[in-house]
Length: 85
Image (cartoon, rainbow, N blue to C red; front, side, top):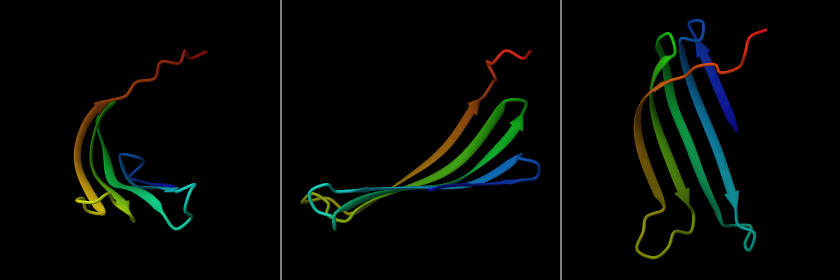
């Protein structure tokens, strides 16, 4: 599932992405990743963002936890390489 909520003419975007990976061997086993964040257009093609990624495994390997979280602050630049006609 991918949801984007553009605000203020697309200068700010809130988003939520989900992916579930079921086990082929056992239907009750699964792995889930979830990204929640905000993207901000700074100026021209420059953009910044903050994201929280959560990974969940309902049957983690021994000695590990079932949930892992990652916090990301990003800075990037996007540009269009397609030729305008």
